[in-house]
Length: 112
Image (cartoon, rainbow, N blue to C red; front, side):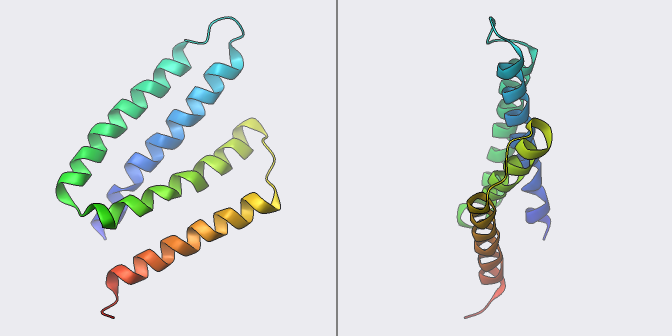
């Protein structure tokens, strides 16, 4: 269970980085490199180190599929922070991702 909580750290950093990057490039007309874009790169750099620690301690096949939660989180961050529309297709895709993660987690614990 601990590994599943630890994977939330890189996912959270991905969401923060993508949100900061989007904000940075959206707000600046003439200068594409600004504080928010640099923050985005910094967060992804930190995320990479945390990811390497996770890879050292856990099976790749167990934790990598859980990164797809970042797609779900970024979708909702875009909706709430940037007023990007949610379509039925996006919500259905999100449901498919969540179902896949549920199957993956159940498979980790089943003895079939």
